[in-house]
Image (cartoon, rainbow, N blue to C red; front, side, top):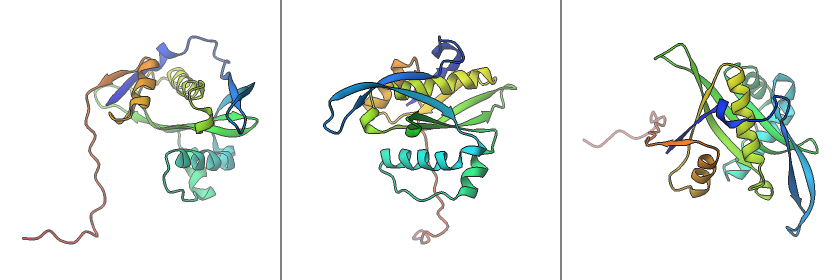
Amino acid sequence: MLAVIAGRNLWKGPAAERERYVADADIEGTMRTEARVVVKRLGAADVALAQATFRLMAEVFDEGVGELTEAYVSALLGRADFWAMAALQDARPIGGITAHVLPMTRSEAQELFIYDLAVQPAYQRRGVGRLLVETLCRDAAAAGVPVAFVPADVEDDHAVAFYQALGGQAAPVTIFSFEDRAHDPPAAP
């Protein structure tokens, strides 16, 4: 499933508005206070924050966490076609989103491919993911990239419902993956 989101339709507030107050949970899981969450687009000066955000995202997805070097992250953040944002609470990342700007060939336009979105489990279902997607889409639309799309596994009911709640329209697409097979044994005759 692929959800297509038009950035100009998502954000209704003023351009400077990039924060939300979300309920903060204590160790026992009971609600204590309302805490401010700020979304920040990561740039070349944010290498350490980006490393922490990317590590958090890998942990949320329960993927192997390899340490990304400063040089790699700096080069990634320096690319104009790569967008990364962190949701911060008290200056520490609690969520993140990454996306790639893709030039189109059917027109002189670009679209935004949302690659990863992750929020720490303790902050899920409190508006942090919505704030990340809305901020990303609003900023991309302001930069001349009005359409964003994101793949979601059909079996992932929470992701599908989340993107639908944001106004995403499902597109029946099958994505194929190809891995390096140079080291595979030759096929039997």
